[in-house]
Image (cartoon, rainbow, N blue to C red; front, top):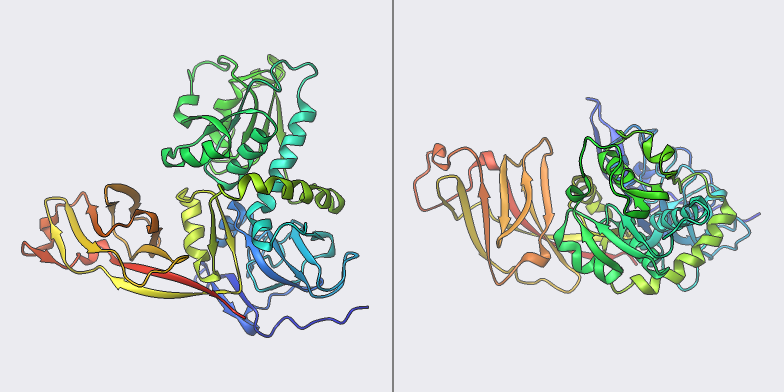
Length: 460
C-alpha cells in the first residue's frame, strides 16, 4: 500500500460558501481553510483545471450543480498522481473527470485534489496538463455526441455525410471543439453564433459558413419548416433548440449538450413522428465508464494539433475565477479557459475616476496605453459598485453596467491603443450631478473605474 501524502500544507483553492445572511460567495482559501470534507481518494497535484459552464454555475451557487456547500468547483483537472492508484504509479500524468467532482465533492479549482479512483485515467503523453484541460470535459462531450449521432442516424439517411451540420453556441468552448471535430471528419459545418467578431476563429476551425440565431426562427406558427440540417450539435437549449428541431431533415439527428439558452423546450412531436428526427442527450459526467474515458483521451489528443494554433484558451489564476465565472454566465467570453491553481496574480491598478468630460447623456475619458505591460499580461477594465450605463471603448461596445453585482470586469487587452477613449452613456441626463463643465470626477452613481494590469507567476 502506498504512503498517504498530506495535502493540507500549502493548499490553495477557490471555495464557494454560503454566508450567514444566506447569500453565496466565492474566494481564494489557503491552508486549513481550503480543506473540505469528503477528500478520500488518492492525492493528485493539480496543474490545470478546465473552466466549464457547469463550473460557472457552481461558482454562483446554482443548486442544480453545487449540490453541497462549501464546495470547490471544477468538474475536471489534469496533473500528477502523488499516490499510486487505478493501476498507475505515483508520478503518473493523469486526467480526472466526472464522478461528482465540483458538484458533490471537491473539484479541480485547487492545488491538490483527492478524486475517486474511478475518475482517474492516464493523460496522453503528447498533451501537457494545460492542453488536456483546454480540451477537457468539453472535448469528451463532443466525441460522445459525434458517436451518438452516428449511431442514431436513420439507416440510409441521405446526406448524412454530405449535407450541412449545425453547431449552436459556436463561440463557446464546446461549440469550437465540435466545429473542429466535425470539420476534421469531412462534414460541412455551419456555425451558429451571436458574435460576429468570432467569425475568423470559427472559419479557421473549419466552419464553412456562419448564421445568426435569429435567422433560424422561421415562421413561429409552423411546427415544421424546410429541412436543412442533417445533424446538429446544440450547446444552447431552450427556444433555439426548438427552432433547430423544426428544420432537421428526415432521419436527421440532434445532440443536446447545454442549457445556456434555457431549460424549457417549447416544441411539438412533429419533428419526431413526421420526419423521424432523433434527439440525443449527452452526459459526459456520469455515463462514460472509466475504460471508455481512457479510450477517448488518445482520440482527443489526436484532435489537438488541429486546434492548438486556433482555439482561444485563456489561462487563469485562482484569483480570476470569480470574474471569469461572471463573464461566462453573461456570455461575454470566447473559447475555453484553463485554471492554473499554482499561478498567482499580481495586480497593478490605474485609477480612471478622474478627468471625465460630460455631455448631455454621456461621460468620456481619454487615456494612454498603460506602461510596463509584458507579454502574457492582460488588462481589465473594472467598475466597483457599477451604476447603470452602456460602455464603449475605442468604438467597441462592451457589456452594459448595472445589475446587482458589486463588481463589473471585462478584458480589454485586445482593444487598447496608444490613445484610448472610454464612453459611458446613461439614461439620466448628465447635468443632474450638479457638476461644472470641463473635466470632472466620474459621478459616484456610475461606479469606480480602474484598469487592472494582471501578471501571472507560478509558485515553484
